Length: 152
Image (tube, rainbow, N blue to C red):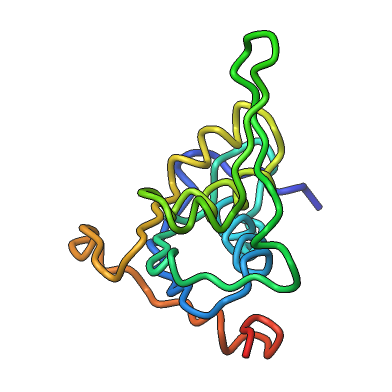
């Protein structure tokens, strides 16, 4: 028996669309990270980008449990004393609410060159509209996968 290792010719990428309205952020991010990485496929190869292209819509209507809306995202500017922070609620109310979903998915991937390449396959939109109708994406219903995925 030989171990299968995918080559670029073996990789088949699909387009998937996920509606984030009413879905818990962490559960959505883990499903999206798994789809981007390709771990749901039997032909998964750790050193190849064999995941799907994922479109997330309605990112501004994401749900969070507990007091997570009041928790901060921290970053550093690189200058002395340059630590910055903003709560998730402030980001959701701001001009780019899709960044909450993007950062959650990014932090669930390993921190290497491959994950930076994989992140280019993720498209997050704050509202319903997206410009990817020509790719005819398949709908992935995250809400019906598990009752804990939604928050009542």
